[in-house]
Structures are given as C-alpha cells and as structure tokens.
Image (spheres, rainbow, N blue to C red):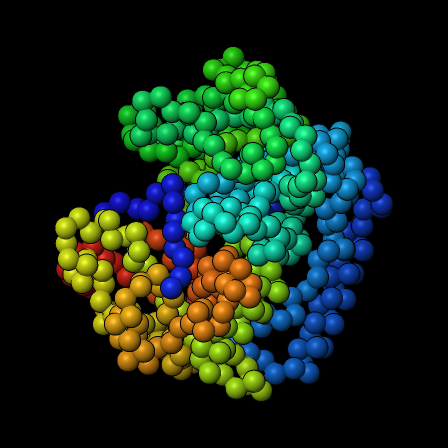
Amino acid sequence: MDRQDAYDDPETPFIPTFRAKLRPTKGRKPSPRTICAALAGISLLSFGFLLLKPLSYVDIHDAPSYSAVFNSQSYVQGPPAQRFRDNLRNDTKYITSWTSAGWTNDVMTYGNLIYLALITERIPIIAKFLSSHIDSSAPPFAFGDVIDVPRLSQAIGIPLLEWHEVKDPESQVLDDLGCWSVWESVEKYKQDPRPRESPTIGRLKLDISWTRTPDWVKLTPPGIEDDHASFWSLATLGFPQARSDSLGLPNHPSPQHQVSLPPDDQLLCFDFLYFIGAQRPWEWELDYSPAWRFVGQHMRWNTSIERLADAHARRAMNVPVDEPTPPYISIHARHGDFRDQCRGIPLDQCFASLSIIARRVSEVQEELRTQKGIEVTQVIMTSDEPDPEWWSEVRALGWTWVDYAKERTEEIYGKWHPVFIDAIIQSNGAGFVGTRGSTMSSLALRRVQSWHNGPTRIVQWGWPGADDH
C-alpha cells in the first residue's frame, strides 16, 4: 500500500540549543534580562488570571503574547516594498521556498523550511498557503492567520517573516531571482525532471532562474528510488564553499526575462522542501524527527482560529455555555482518494469498519482511564466520507461531528475553515485515532502526543483484517 504522495492532499471534510546570529538595528534589541523579566511578568499575570476563571480540558483562550520579543519589522528595511530586495537588510541572510502539495503537506514543508533556517542561521520568509486541495477559487491564506507566529518565533529562538511583510502583495514589479532546484535532482518519476513549480511564484511576481542541486543532496543511496533530499546536504549550499563548488551545475534561464542567474546568496531559495529528511525518508512520522522536535511541535494554532474551532466542537458536543469544554477523543477517518489504493478490494473490506475504529477508541479510553484517571465519553469524528448511511452509523455509536453545512462555516468564514477546524479539533483531543498513510493523521497524532501527552492509535486498512491485533 502506497503512502499518500505530495502531489495532492485532498483531505477536505464533509527546543533547539542553537540560535541564529541576528542583528536588528531598528530600535534597541531587548537584553536577555529584559526578555526574562517580560516573560516572568506575563507568566505571573497569566497564572493570576487562571486562578479566577473556570478551567477547560484545553485552555486556548489566553495564550501569552510574545510580540515584544521578536519584532519582525526589525529584520526588514521598512513597509512592504515594490521590489522584495529593496526591503532586505544588508547585514541579514534569509531563506525561502514555496508549496504545492495540499495544506497538511504544506504545513510540513514550511516546518522543513524553518528547520533549514535554524541550521543555516537565516531568517525564513514564508508565503501564504494555497487552496489547491480545497477550491481554486479560495484565496491564499496567510501562515500567521492559522499558526501563532510570535509564539513559534519565541519557542525556536529566531524571527520569522511572511512574504506580505517583505513585498507588497499588490506590486506588479517582476523580480529576478536565482534559486536551487532540489526537485530536479531527486524526482523519481520522470526521465527529464524539471524544477518544481508553484502558483505562489507567479503571485509573488518572481522570475526565477533555477540551478540544479548536486546529486549528493539525495538522502538515500544511488539506486534506491526515493524523492527525499538531506537537510544537511541542502544546508551546505547556504555556505560559501559548497555554494561556490556547485555553481557550474545546469542552469535554467528565467522564463520571462530569460536571464541566467546563480542561486542567490542573501535569499537562499529552494523549489520544494516537502521531501526532506535527516536520516531517513518520512521522518515526520518518527519520534526523533528534528523538523518536528525543533519546529513542528512549536507550530501552535493562532488563538483566534483555535477559539473558533473550540466553539464548533462545543456545539457538536452540546456543551452548555457556562460549562468548560470537556475532554474528548478525536478521530480522523480518511477515505476519499484513498479508495484508489484499494485496488479492486471492495471498499467495505478495504477501509476499516466503524467497529474496528471503535475498538481503537476503546483502547484510548482505557489508557486515559488507567494512566490519567479521566473518563472520556465524548468522541468527535472528522472524515471526508460522503455516505450518509456511514454517518448514521457514527451517530449510532454515540459519537458526534461538526455539521459544517448547519454551521454555515464556509458561508461565514470561507472555504479554508472546515479544514482548519478539523485539524484543530483533531489536535486538541485528549486522545486520538487516525488513519494509516494520512499525513493529516500523522500530524494530529504528533500534536496530541506532544501538546497533551495523550494516547494515540493509527488504524490499519487496505485488506480484510488489516487492523487485527
């Protein structure tokens, strides 16, 4: 059974010891003593407020503010510019990349980008998420509108920039830029691989001249078919020696200005960073994953959107207004495009039945009971299954789900929000049950384990008895 690839991720619902050497000059940089005092004050105020308010299982309403610690505007020249380079500081180096793989995979891609920023001592510039997996009519969604950027920046010890802070989104100026093409070196499906394109590049008005990365960036040995590159091999291209040694590799002139440029030194850029690992492929699924440990687990939700997800979950569970949100078990049952992997096996035998999923839920409930002493009876299902009869069976088990049509979520908030709300509900379960091979399940599992120390299970599927144990 093949793992879901990065070409599409259509799951739509029915602390490091190193620090970057960064030198802002806009305003005085706070000293360590000032930072510690500020954080201590925030902690004391937060603690005092918590004493006065009722607790819920997941308290998401009063995340501390970290904006005073890293002011992103200290790492650009000023307001968004017509040309991105006019806004880069001469004493600072940056790194960027783009996405084209579906939202969950794009979150992982940006996690990889930020980890590369850490090990190359650069500031990441992050573009908006694209809606390729939802509806092409949905506008791009800013990274900081779904991820708490100040909190992430504080946790990992470096500032983060978003592209709309660097270049005016309304600018019509076409900027020349030289970048590295990783995809051209590792892509396994085509005889003549090309740089990985992204619609974001056109939106940012960038005209890119691509240089192929050296073959030694590939993570796996020659002869093994795999698309992954190595973190540290790519990182070396951000330093003088490896960059200089690699400048003679094949170069593609930019498509519009037809200029051939070497990869930029100040703004290190790569075409596609989803398939990156430190020791082996698919590391986000593994406990040692450096991208997860040093970045991914610190990518907490923007408080506003998390509060919105909590409100949806509360209404799904019929929680009275004056009561805290109870602990619940979240489930992600991905079907949708996974049907293509059943390869002739009837769907009712290929996918795990609800009774099999219920067995996994019972295991999570028992672990919560014995290890944490809490009785969790609320269960929230998230799935892309369209069959009304299947959902009736979910209801018969005593489980619930968010009815996005009844909530008018898309109508009120936009097409992105059901996807975001599902992911947040999954991540805030006291325990979690997911689907093998789904990156959405993999990230939810990681979040529940890291953020809530919750028990998790992954349901196997693909043939009759796949989840027998």
